[in-house]
Length: 306
Image (tube, rainbow, N blue to C red; front, side):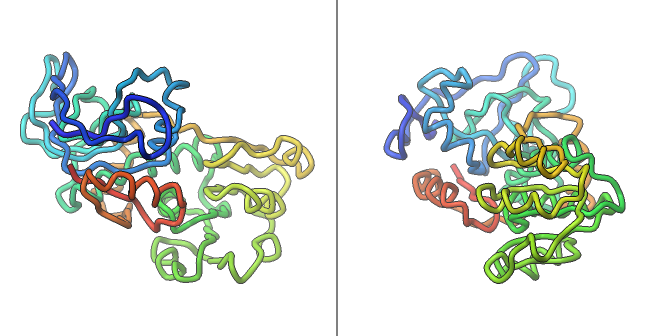
């Protein structure tokens, strides 16, 4: 089968289109024919060398987020049959940029009929990161006010919708061209970061969910009320700043949680959770895909089609 493989860590040049042996599902696993593989920052970070910290063995196939059709079912699998359309997050952080992937059945859910494979492949990482950030770390509840930086991005847009479903008041930041998009997702207020300073426009929020980092994160501390929470997906927030402003800080390290993914899938199925696909490329376009992802300005997910 065709796959994007690396034999050493490094820049984009280490990624090669290779002909590799097709995996076979073990007990409790399914073999999925991949229709769409989403690109995530963790993919190019693994390529750069993070894979070594994760304990991944070279050579490896990149990609952790896929959608496709069940081709073969391993022993003991009861929730899926051959022909089921599924999507999921691969807990090994690898294997997705390929024609086929074998992974535990628990890492997949049934794809709702009303969304396509590109959209389905875009859901797990962004939705789980947002869910764990605003609920597990931020403890967001109905009636609270939340500031979401980078609200038009893959993770930020999921956070807006999840917060809206929870009954929170949402303030989103982003480029002015995305104001309508973020508003339609459920944001109550929008701040164009090119025209206004968020710390001058916002104060007294209960939760900040930061997907931008850097200077934006530093200034976001000023928008929190004392006792509030700042959660980041990008870089660990300063404990010194947290002490200065009397708030709690946390960094999201997304974990695969089947029960959360099942709940997210129910929201997708009901139409209350939507994802925007920014770019679709063939597997051979993986270098361009990583460039777009690393640039940080893609308005939605980047998809590779094997």
